[in-house]
Image (tube, rainbow, N blue to C red; front, side, top):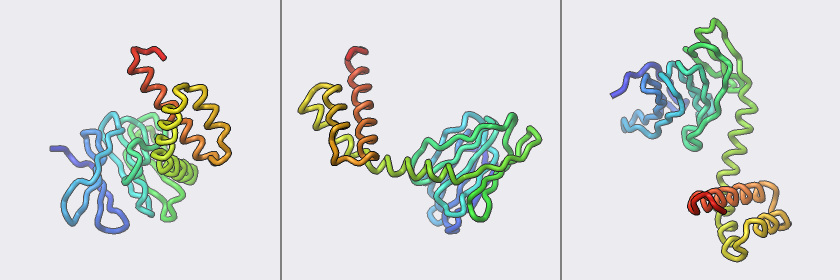
Length: 188
């Protein structure tokens, strides 16, 4: 059981988001009553919440002085907006969604430009969609070459890969190297 502090409706009128003193943000379906998603990126009670007008982002804030902007259907990590020096009590998106306003116990109202956040969100989403193919490519190259330097060189030299695909493959390679390093008693 958790105490709900604030609630906001999605523009579809079906989903809503709630925040509580248990440090969570919950997205729920009002037709079924089911909780669809729980975000736990806050480190203290959450006091304010707002759905972006397009419904693809949620902003939450609270006692930890941070504002988090989440993707209710995707990335569970969120983007943190630092700046307030006291609790953040309230949030609201502008009707066009290009700005977010926050009110805090530090006696300030801050206006945030959300367009760069949208670009980061879209870039993350695009990168996430490339990840499965990139991981398969890196797995295949490691099986063929069994050498991280050769795999990296092959990825850099492959002209059939666009920059986003190459970046996703290099990230997948780094992840695989890290996993190998951890599995092999910190030896590579």
